[in-house]
Image 1: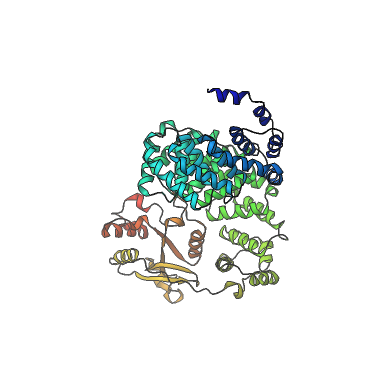
Image 2: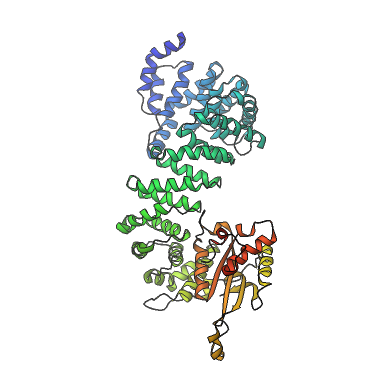
Length: 572
């Protein structure tokens, strides 16, 4: 320790500074004692650190007092005059503190510190570069900011082999961000992989969010970090665990083992999370298209026990998640849906028309039709309210699906209900292009089916598009007796072949998500046998192999050449 640092430690000013509990206390202190150059930086740092543990409301109040304090401007002026005499660490820390305190970026003091950082950039060590990167991360683009970022990119690239601190590396990665050249991102990836044995649990969590910030998907890094997180779930608080899931979504990274482990962990520790936190978990899992089975089962029991604990926002989110992921609650299904419907009914007077439509739509997806909610939605005044509002086109699609549910599912209601045509909009369908690989495969499959015929791109109920309908006579000789009384539909099998992209299924499963599950349900009611063909089924390079797979899906009895696992999720 240098003699100057020893004097700093013994300084009465610093002892008094550490007793200050807010920025205003620090400013009051600078009125009584004139801080040295080093102490100016200490004051700015302490002003920010004193606010970290405050609530949002208290922080806003303290910031207002700080900006109104007559000594605040004097302190900033003193900092600006002292910057040339500050050590590098103090320059970087002072800039970071002022940015965090909300000092305007275009102010003279901030611009002076930015120019000083540019002048000294080559002299900054790893720690100082990391502090500067943290400050720049929260700043908007501008001439001096852009110049510093470009300078830092060059410095980091040159010094990359010598960086030894994981957090410093991550901070610089975040600063370089999505605009960093691909070659530099790959160098950063290699450097990070060389340091994985040093990764702490927080490092692993922060690395995933850092990759999301950079827009850089590194499977090896994600695997290492995911493994570390999976092994230490008990030590991760809500915010960090939630941010990991959000970052996975941004990176389009879905590790079934990691997601299942998090779901199991949250479900087994259900009582330690608030209801709001549980709803956030459910929502981000849905964003990932992943069905957290254990969490959804545990949470449904919580809802059944105490549905009144859910706010309207909670209810709408829970409905969206359970209907979207098409989760089968089995014996708990009726209790769960009745609990949600009852809780929603208590909010009827507070719900907007759009909120009510969303709630009813989700319940219809779940094949549940509470009369009170339906009657309120289809009330003339509610429909007029919705018609007068400038709502997105998606509301028409929701009304169209509700209409289909009322007509096809035919729920037992106290009074018949229908969706008026005025709410349905134009049921004009965009004509999707024919999937050529599927079309060719279907034609090849039917080449050896003498009595079968194929209709492509058939529109049913003016809403559902079927990629291919195969019509095949039923092999039942008793039907010949009274053919005149039997309709063509009854005397033949109608197989509805539907191409379904990966996003139509819960990730890692063959479970169709909400809209696709509804389509399958309705086609069954209409007498079709639905067969789902996925992207994977059309991937094989050989046309013969693709035809065999499609044949196995449609006619399992003729699937001699099709591998058993290829036919696993055929019919729904």
